[in-house]
Image (cartoon, rainbow, N blue to C red; front, top):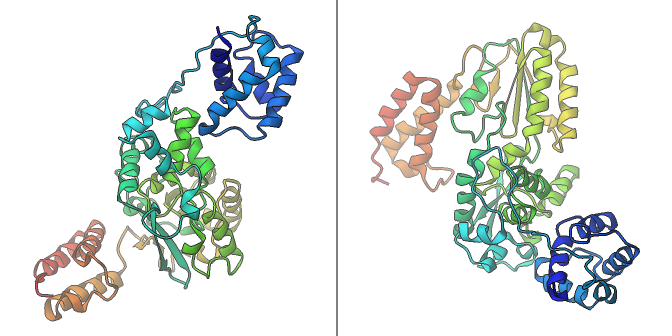
Length: 434
């Protein structure tokens, strides 16, 4: 083997492991036959020349440095090196995900050039420093929440959205969430989330703070690695599915208090963007251990547990009602240990004597819509017929017809008879009349 070939093989081996003294030694021993003093001296020189692991585009610089190192040159032709195939391969996956063993095959699968893949994965963090304009991958919009705070929606532009949609449809959709998760899961809904808690003595509701931004890139990377993808491929997939928010897109109110400061730091680090099609599925998968531990806690306590996105619900009989505060403390501790946080202001302990409501569904006897929601929707539909559609779209929904139809469909799933009446009123509206 000539020295240039040996240098490339050694460089590729070194980049497979951790960039530490021990990690580099383990990697080097993939291609070096014997552990000798010269190897330790060589690795110390290497770490002085490259304190951090070289980026992909610096691979040639690493090869050149190795090729010119005197210790390497003295040994490269002495038979201490052997060729080892370092062709990346996927580890065995439990799910039928696409086989993407290299960054090149990932680019082909996404119908991108390698340069385009690098651009969309944004390993250099360009989105965070790019001036406002067409080169940014996301459109940002702050919308008000109840209580006066703002929620930042990070919507990917069309091409990135299409790439994320493919990842969702062909990779993430075949990886199951925990059985306790009901949001964004096929065959489950807000109704199935709430139904588990119908006709119970007490219902405990918790809310997770800043659910999507709380999921860091490291968790997303771990999900793709668990799916069987090599680290380089997982890193690219993670880059496509996470974002670092530019500072000039953050509302001034972010950072005004402790909670806002925490959210600000999360948005300024790689996180799941609320608005990307991949984020709900990745958030569910990142919460798998949380669901697992809370399910075990609930089972040990003889109660029911379900989760819909950032809404957690527990319910049980009178025995649970007596110990609900102790259970709440245990649940909060698990949430914190799993990297999330509870919003205490939104915690509710609801006994039979009050309206027990989860995600808009009343569960005192059976899953049902609040009477007020039916009355409001009935009034809107009536006024649409009498005064025109435009008079009722006070919140300026861009697709008001679909918005109303979605509300009717939701109410129908809870109360078919009322839903049928609302649909009849909806069908009488003149949608072309303004």
